[in-house]
Length: 144
Image 1 (cartoon, helix red, strand yellow):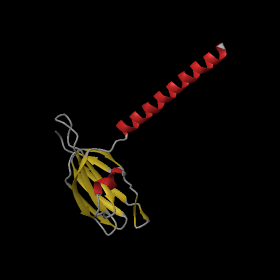
Image 2 (image 1 turned 30 degrees about the vertical axis):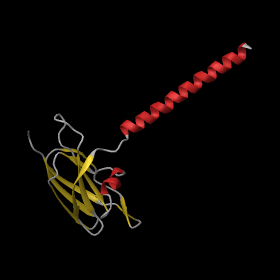
Image 3 (image 1 turned 90 degrees about the vertical axis):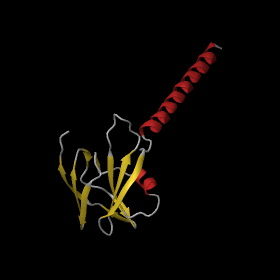
Image 4 (image 1 turned 135 degrees about the vertical axis):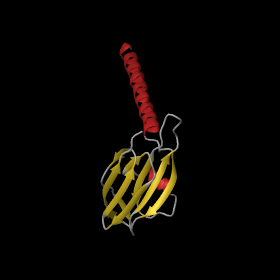
């Protein structure tokens, strides 16, 4: 009789622990993997297959500086913000004033301002074909 009571209590304890783990995981996913609060700034067609999209982070307050995110993707006439939610930006900076050009498989970006993050390659699909442009960055810093 006592054995059944012990098993029932252990089962209840294990179920409670598993429920807490699942709730914690779902909370983590909600807060840390939520889509960014961005607004669309501009679109610039660089070549037949590469288009530059710029978004601005909108959820900051007086203590958060402007953050602009730069994406390379195919020319998209639909809901671009929905498409960009699934992508990672190749560049994050404090300004949207960039000069960008593309030649073949190379994208050249020139920016004056603070660069928060940068990666020199990107991958996206256009009409089922993988496009992986190489990105050259020329960044001129500024002093505040």
